[in-house]
Image (cartoon, rainbow, N blue to C red):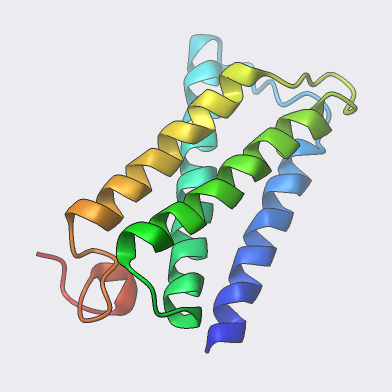
Length: 132
């Protein structure tokens, strides 16, 4: 089961890379285009952080706070590398502001990890338990 969780992390990271490799993602929605793209940034990196946390949860027996940090740091590093990668994609540009947007998603998941039982071993919606 641990292997499948780490495979999910790798596959999600590959999806982020694939989406970042598409030249120019303007959808022609005006201001809504910006909203959709920034929301996607938040979601992509929130989900990556959640997948990392769940994989680490089954791989290591350490405190929840430490696991949250161990999930957040690689997700943030991947956000930086994603923006660096976009510097070399036609009609795209890397932006430190986008890393900050990615960090919002990472911080949301870290907050949920530390303040709720959504990601706990015993319960939680991502573990097949019932959300409270």
